[in-house]
Image (cartoon, rainbow, N blue to C red; front, side):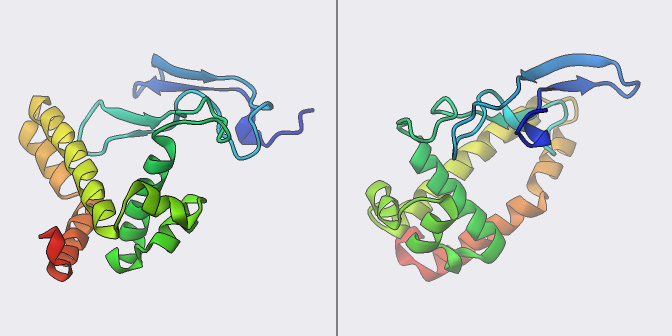
Amino acid sequence: SYAVPAGSFPHTTEVLDLAGKVLRVLHEAPLQENVPIGGVPTGPRGIDWVPALGHTLWWTEALDGGDSRRDAAERDRTVLLDAAERLMAEEGYAAVTSRRVAEQAGLKPQLVHYYFRTMDELFIELFRRRAEELLHHHQLALKSPQPMWALWELNTDPNGTSLTMEYIALANHRKTLR
C-alpha cells in the first residue's frame, strides 16, 4: 500500500474512438509519490478538449519541473494572470484587486506589483493574453472542416462571452483601458 491519494497512482491518458479503440496515448503518468509539498507532477495535466475546435486538446505542464521552490521565470507571472482571470470570470472585474489576486494565486501581494506596476497593467496583459489565445483559436477554427460552425461555437462560449462583457464594463470605468 502507498501513502498517496488515488489520483496520484500511475495512470494513462488516452484518446479513444466511439468504439473504445485507443487512437493515441497522450501521457503515461508514473506513481507520484515524490512530488514535493506544494509542487505538481511533471508532464501534461489538466488535459481537456477545446470546445469550439473539434479534434483539439490543451493541457498544462509545469515550468519548474513540478517543484514550486525552483525558479521558473514565468511561473509567478502566469499564476497571477490565471488567478486574476479566474476572479474576473467568477466575481467580476471589481473583485480583481492585488490582495485578492495574490490570495487566489497563493503568493504575496507585493508580487502583483512587482510584475505589474499598476492594476491597469495587469488588466492590459490579461486582455492581451486572452486576445492572443482567441486569435490562435480563430485560426484553428478557420482551418477546421466546418469553419463557420467552429467560429460560432468559439464566439458563443458562455465563459468567453462573460469575460468579454467584463472587459467592456472595465473599459467603461477605467479611462486608461479604453
